[in-house]
Image (cartoon, rainbow, N blue to C red; front, side, top):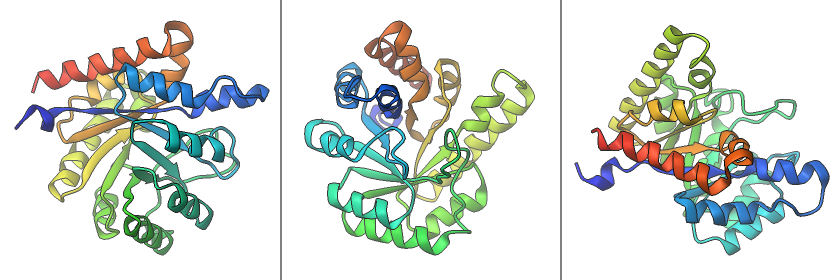
Length: 251
């Protein structure tokens, strides 16, 4: 196994830079500037979720990110016709299909691959026909891994929200969640899927989750933006990069 096989990519989600901007209106702080700082600090990609209600990232933000950054953009989107048209127009490096409920504060879990199976299938097909890599945001369940393969997805991103929520509250339950993520990551890789993970991660949870060898990318947002208020965006990203690299040295 080469060092490239062991390298764990860091995707930085800049949604909440836009949340702060939108709280007051205007153009500051600028998500594009955050993306540029993230790249210089060691991020391997930028993630942005264009929601139906545009509560943070806007259409203009997506246009500017596509046109002005030299780093892959992962567009998080619901599998809807509106979002599909936007993805086709801008052609990001990848699209991660996520569930979306207008009333939720943040994404609450993985996609239901069975309830909206045909809708997701058609979305995957169209995106891939446009040369866009497709990821499905799923819970760590065997049936979801298998269905992601059936849907012809390139990537699965395993939802780490439950693991993160239980990390400090219940050690036994946290270990159980960690075990499920590890097992499903191994299963997905064995099926030929690229495996990512994300949601709710901080320094300590990232240190542990980075030990799961099949993982190729972590996507982290809220904690990075929140912690940057105290330590600066570049400093926080460099610390995550160091944590991830250090864990991978132990393989």
